[in-house]
Image (tube, rainbow, N blue to C red; front, side):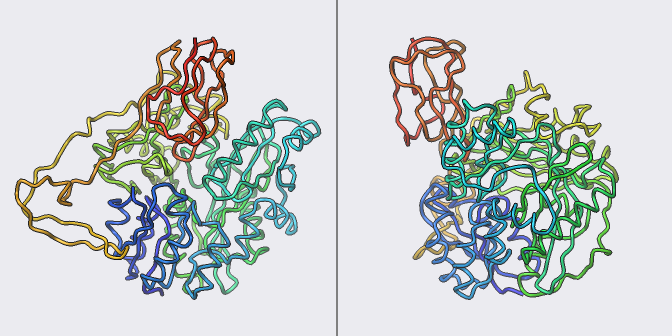
Length: 583
């Protein structure tokens, strides 16, 4: 087993890995950006090293800074979490070349399966077939148009080196091809550091079903049941459940066998997920995620297997302690992702900013995984996942009822969240009857009148104390020390319990029919669509704003002529800033 593991990630998943390591007696090392200096994963780790920078590109995607932290800390293992470098073969190879263990698959498997194009080809070699598509990299919108005219619309553009819905765009007609390809490339580059994309047919009413696999270095590979992840918005999951309900047992067994075949076909080791689209009694291979999934806790609750523990044991050379015959699925689990987004009207607009209060639920079969505490902040520069509510019940109706009960206890103030939408999904008869699909949230679920406005002032200050705990850095390494300071000293400035609160976004746009085009949140302008003199209609895009790794069109609320454009590509803006004027 490892002596010290560095977690090359942040937030909830970093906290999850730290806790698993601690239970195994393994020391942990955190890394952090300037904005995460006081983050929960930093406070929980045994050591922490500064990466510098604010954005992901300046910090968590800075290979040299992370390699430097590995060397300084003496870590003998690196867990990548999910996102960032988790599916980057070059990063995995850079670590293994230094004699440090990458807690994940071999670089060769990441190269095959991390590239969704070669992954399709590898799956077909073992007799597992996907949705009709093209393995050619997209360099010209004409490729999309030609494919759509031959195979029909809509078409899905996907990031070749990504997952989780990032960099995925749906093209409904030839007129959208160029803009959607540009947008997909920008998102893929921002989130995964690479912008290669490919395309395939987009099924209109499938269910998204995943198979969790686990493989060791001794040739053993098992699947740990299924998960249904069909409740999505923008191709990103809101609610996941395990096992996938309402699918015949023989189909489940076929999916499991197909997943194991795909994993063995690329000599896969460690935890991974093989994804399928299920429709009309049949299933199509979608992709393989060569990492731990966000929704792994749902599989843990129905199998009783700690997946992070198994990742650590497999990476240290141990054989799996169970076979396929030992795997038993018990009850039903539901995971609800709580994101800092306002779902009002189905818009799901990001809502960065500080938490003034975070009170999590408890009770039988109830778990809450998060990387935040009250006083922490959701930054525009990172993913907006606040936490994950995971519940277990003896059956699906019990799990749904337990999830609703727990959501009623969950209190988050300071930012808008997806909780109202989550409740609307769980209470809907379509969900109860298992009749939803991947487009159901966006096409069927009525979120009219549903809102999650930020609450709480964020002005609260804790009373100063005489003895303070202070976090300091020496040569880039973080230390926690205690200091005695004058009683009148401000608590936050002295490094006491009150953590600094940075300004957050979350402001609204202009009023209905306003000629002022205002951005609804803080972020970065990635594209200016309209120019001075353009004639626009209500709903026409004026600029494209990136916030929390998602692109959002900021549209005209009034028809007329654009008389001012106040921003350029690359500009940072705050919530409520006017970026253009229409008269």
